[in-house]
Length: 291
Ligand SMILES: C[S@@+](CC[C@H](N)C(=O)[O-])C[C@H]1O[C@@H](n2cnc3c(N)ncnc32)[C@H](O)[C@@H]1O
Image (cartoon, rainbow, N blue to C red; front, side, top):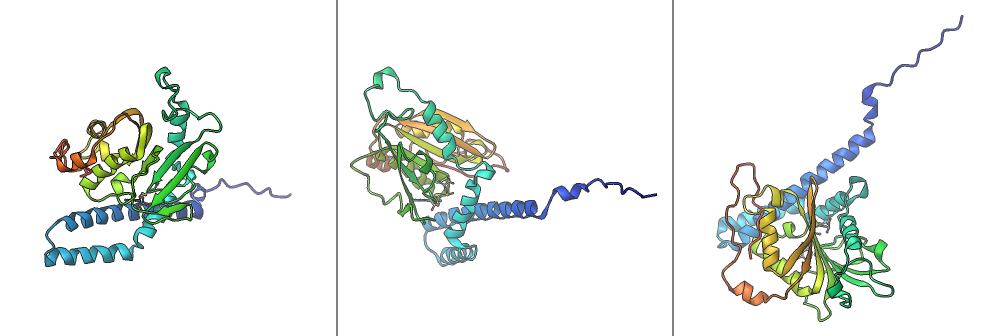
C-alpha cells in the first residue's frame, strides 16, 4: 500500500517573505531619515536667526555634522524619491493632472489663453515650473501639452536645473502653472515659507494655477496652522482656492492666481499672519507660515 503524503498547510509566516520585510524596513528607514532631516533643518534655521553666541555656533556645527553623517541633502532626497515611488501610491503630480483635466473655462475667460483649465488645444501648451522637484520626470508623460521646467537646490538628475527659488529671477514670461510639492514644509524659516508663496504669485500669469502639497499634519495637527488659516494666507497673497484633497498622509491644494501683489510692501509691513497659537495640545506640531 502506498502512503499518500498529506499536503501541509502553508505556515502563515511564509506569506511575509524576506523581500516584503526588507521593503518595509527600507521604507521605515527612509521615513525616519526624512523626519530627522526636517527636525534638524528647522533647528538649524532657527539658530541662524539667533545671536551667534559660542553655544549657538557649537550647536550649529553639531547639527551640520549630524546631517552630514546622515548623508546630507542627497540622502534626504533619495529617501524622498522612494516616497514618490508609484508602488507606494506616491507621485503627487497624478492628483494635479487629474484636477487640471477636469477643470472647465468659464465663458468670460474663453478667449484668455492664460486661464489654465483642461487640456489646451493643440498646438498650444502650458508652461510649468516644478520647484523643489528632485527628479525631472514628474511631467514627462504630459510632455506634449505641458512644457515643464524643474529646479531644485540639489538635483538628482540632469533634467533638473540646480537653483534656489529664493534667488531665481522673476521671469519676464511668466508661468501658467507652478508646483510646490512638499517644499514649503522643507523650508526651515517660517518667514521664508510665506515669501516662497508670495514669490510664486510673481512667477505666475494672472489666472495661472498654483499646486501645493503639504504633509497632512501641517494643517491638521499644528499649533499654528489650520487648513482654514493656510487658505486665508493664500487668499492674502492673491490666490483663490480651486479645489483641495486630504489623504491620510498629505493635503493637496490647487489655487488660482486672481490678483497681483506687491512683495516689497508685504515684506516691509507688520506681518498680517504672525505666529499665533491656534490650537493647543502636547501632541501637536509647530508647523507655521508667517507673512
Ligand atoms: C521633500 S522634497 C520634495 C520632492 C518632490 N517635489 C515631491 O513632491 O516629492 C523637497 C525638495 O525641495 C527642495 N527645495 C527646498 N527649498 C528649495 C529652494 N529654495 N529652491 C529649490 N528647491 C528647494 C529640496 O532640495 C528638496 O529636494
